[in-house]
Image 1 (cartoon, one colour):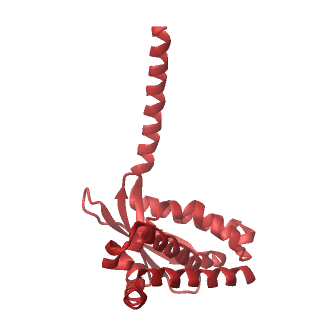
Image 2: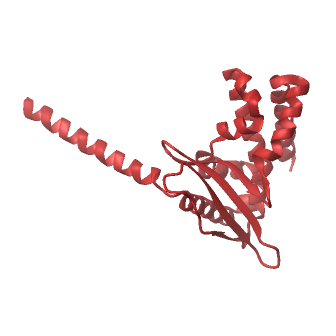
Image 3: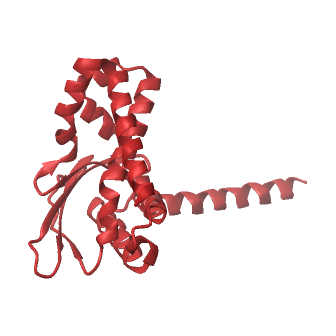
Length: 212
């Protein structure tokens, strides 16, 4: 009886150790390596999926949900865009703000995946202080006969790996772009007013996608 218990304990410990080792490898992936891997996976998938190339929004959303969403901290992104009013919002309001802002970002930027053709993606050398929990990753997308597109990502090290919480397209940081608009809307209609505005915008975008 005691031998059987010991076997179970040893097997359990070995399994746990293997699980933690696998988790550790994933969690320790460098931020620039993470951005490079995820972006390349998205580009490859977009190129090979004829439905995405045809503008099928269901396939686009599925790709975004599977490949991009798990690596983005939408709650922190939303809190930064909302600013000081985030601390005044209830937990329910925060959740609704995060959900609506996430949907807006996905609606706004996922359409570009239908235009993925022969673009090439490169990561620039990253300079970060040792042990830093926040880094910025610079990258560039090149395509024939067009100017390169400069992209940058801000990431924070979390318990389950690096998470993107802001990104920059052609010199404009997403959080800063929305912050003044959100502040103005909250000043006019409160947090619930901002939630309604975002929800209305998402419904309009969803209806437009359904018709296209």
